[in-house]
Structures are given as structure tokens and as C-alpha cells.
Length: 213
Image (cartoon, rainbow, N blue to C red; front, side, top):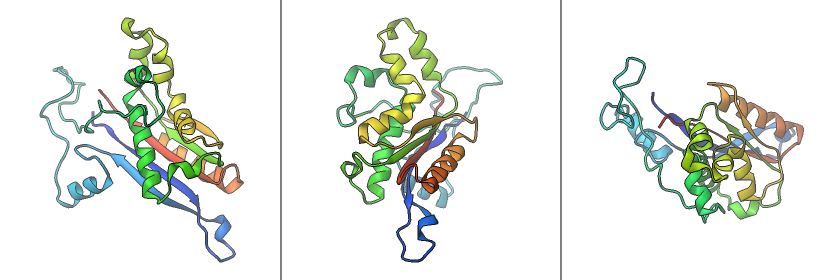
């Protein structure tokens, strides 16, 4: 199966002078990694050049079975992570779900793309909504013998996908992971939009990830 794009968006109310400005919400920053693409710009080039990044070479798994995909699209450099920058203990970083690590990285990129310094969000009412459905790493880290250090639970729990972002940014808005199967990211976006409209938060980070390793 091809990995679903992981992407982060920073959403906040639009500051316009008209009477309807308070009811408007705008996406101000975006980031993501995709097959053979480190960012949205590289994905754009792949699409415009009509390059197919879903191929059969160098698969992550060695199985010959009718239910196992022979063609995959692989997000690059999943093993690399700057734990210190994201306030993560290095042992926890080694036990974290790759999706959680990648979501943290793209959160920083999306905030930067919005023209905001992450430190400016500290203490503010910013929500975090992450859509995630299935995780192979979650079960591996819970039950594999060499992972029984306690870090697997904190590193691979899907609830921590959002909570870790809130902790890193020191934001005080709602922080939740959303599991609605294939539409998890869309539901996360809807929940964030409604929260902003209600005044539960002044801005929100919305993201989603799906990786099959």
C-alpha cells in the first residue's frame, strides 16, 4: 500500500476589516512529505512533470502475497529526527512512532510557512487536531520484548501525536487525535474549524499521517 501523505496546516481567523471578518477562517501555512517528496514544493514538481512516484523498486517489505502491494510510494528519511530540538528524550525518540516524529517536523514547517515563530505561540489558545487511524508501530512498541522500557507507550500512543505538539509549543488549546478511518484528517479539519468559530481556540494546527512500514 502507498503511504498516505502526511501534512500539517496552521489555521487561524482571517484579520479583515469587514463585518464578516470574525466568521472567516484561513489556512496560513502548509507542510507535508509524500512519496519521493520532502515538501509540498517537490510534490508540486512531481505532479506537474507527470512523474509517478509509486514504483515497485526497493520495497520496504519482502513478501510475495496477493494481498501485499507490490507498488509503493515511500516518504523519504523516516529514520532521521532531531529529538533535542523537539524536547524529546533521545531514548523516547528511538521508541516513537515514525508518524509522530514526522508530524512534529511538519508542524514546525507549517508554522514557519505561515510566517510565525513557534515561540510566539507559547501560552496561547492554539488547538492541535491530528487525524490518525492505524499504526503498525503502536503494536510493535507495546509488545516487542526489547521495547518494554515504558517509552513505547508514550512514544507510540496515538493520543500523544497531538499532545506532544501541544507540549512542544506550550499551547493551551484543545489537543486531540481523531480516528475516523479514512476521513480522519478531514474530520480533524472540521473539528478545528468549529472550535475556532466557537472561540475554543484562536488558531489550530491540523494534520494527518498514514505510514505502512
